[in-house]
Amino acid sequence: MPALVLLGAQWGDEGKGKATDLLGGSVDYVVRYQGGNNAGHTVVVGDQKYALHLLPSGILSPGCTPVIGNGVVVDPSVLLSELSGLNERGVDTSKLLISGNAHIITPYNVTVDKVTERFLGKRKIGTTGRGIGPTYADKINRVGIRVQDLYDESILTQKVEAALDIKNQVLTKLYNRRAIAVGQVVDELLGYAAQIEQYVADTVLVLNQALEADKVVLFEGGQGTLLDIDHGTYPFVTSSNPTAGGACTGAGVGPTKISRVIGILKAYTTRVGAGPFPTELFDEDGEALRRIGGERGVTTGRDRRCGWFDAVIARYATRVNGLTDFFLTKLDVLTGWEQIPVCVAYEIDGKRVEELPYSQTDFHHAKPVYEMLPGWSEDISKAKTFADLPKNAQSYVKSLEELSGAPISAIGVGPGRDETIEINSFI
Ligand code: GDP
Ligand code: IMO
Ligand code: MG
Figure 1 (cartoon, rainbow, N blue to C red):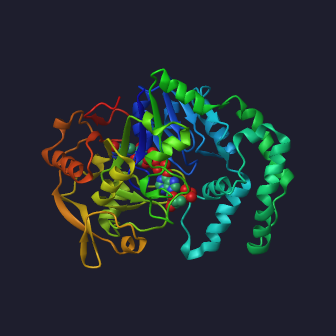
Figure 2: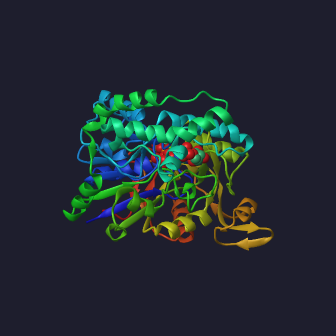
Figure 3: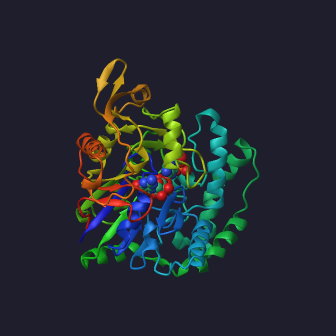
């Protein structure tokens, strides 16, 4: 019963989409377990480039059943347009399964996300504006709308009424906006019901039966460890659990079933939106990483903040996720630097600190302590084995492995499926 979790080890955009797609050919199910269309995963297959937001990246592998688990928040309009976009390009999406317990991102959740950010002003989180936080808030407040509610008009109406009761007070009295009409929301949601019905399933049962039957299941995280609501740089986080435990709650699979946890780790660091980022660069090196790495958000088009590799964060990701392996991505982007700084520890108020401080204030004060590693200038994009890499690239990878606390089992040297060095097999 091989069950693998694949998740981001930094602040998202590590290359999870490419890694999932790569493994997609050898797995039976790929399951999204949290987040929603705040994710943006670019997958390059041959000369075709796909941008996925809500659908699991395994949807591009014909033999694989894509699953949207109960922990995901689903915007039905995004779902349908992503499906029709793929269908137009000849991708068969008919095997998709969606949990009836997944929560729906309603139009009012999107409105609340946007007005809240505007209201926060300088203190804003820099969310993707997709309604993610407000939808999870409704779930926790027990006024959420679930996929299954689309199939009972009377329950749906009661639930939308309950959800809008307080929200309309806040929208009109605090934010000076117009109230949202219950009937309009219900009509819009009912309009999606028939189009989605064929995909709705008891995904918990399906996945557990698949594991019993020795099928290979891959759980694909959105976002990343440092964006986790519990373990990330709160409050500058997303509103779900991208960390490994989230795969269990977000898909309904027990922790004893998980056999491997793979952390996707970029050879440098990026972040989108607000929040602390110790190795962030504001100079030409940061600009070069952004340019060479194509570091622009797939979802919002925002430039990503860029910085050197941070081993303190990688060690932390190993610990909170129980990582068994790393998949190191974008090593090719570092080609051409004479020396590459790697952050091995922080200095906080004059003291050297080896591990991520639990206090938000300390983390805001953390200054990177760098070690300089020798760079390489040879093109590595055609490398197929570890031995094909220049000696300095090999020692960069080995240093990152030692500093981060788990074996690096694959290395990305380009965006394409085949631009990967596989060291240990994952399945
Ligand atoms: P995700 O959100 O974790 O799936 O990552 P994104 O798709 O948002 O960002 C990763 C970007 O890096 C995408 O444009 C990928 O095509 C690209 N990419 C992934 N792996 C590699 C790699 O090894 N080398 C290079 N040059 N690009 C890569
Ligand atoms: P993938 O899956 C990078 C960030 C947003 C913001 C914070 C909260 O492509 O790695 P939200 O809309 O989730 O409430 O925003 O989280 N964020 C991401 N950053 N990659 C992502 O997804 C992200 N999804 C959310 O920029 O700082
Ligand atoms: Mg992304």
